[in-house]
Length: 89
Image (cartoon, rainbow, N blue to C red; front, side, top):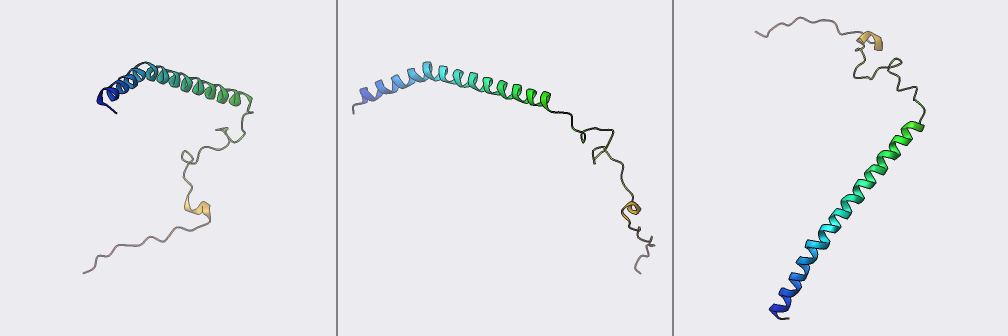
């Protein structure tokens, strides 16, 4: 293959990328936007259909992170006896 033929093929590929490549990228972006919109609408519809969960009520049971700390005695355990510190001579 001659160098001139390779250059012509390369020019053709560059022209295709400049025109068709841009169009393809725009087409893919629009496809992604449409898909994300469909997913958002689907999730909104499912949330609207779903009955409210009894477990999600904050008045019933707070999240464990926000719940008050339980004492050792509430687990049925006894706290250890206090010890005094004596340094080694």
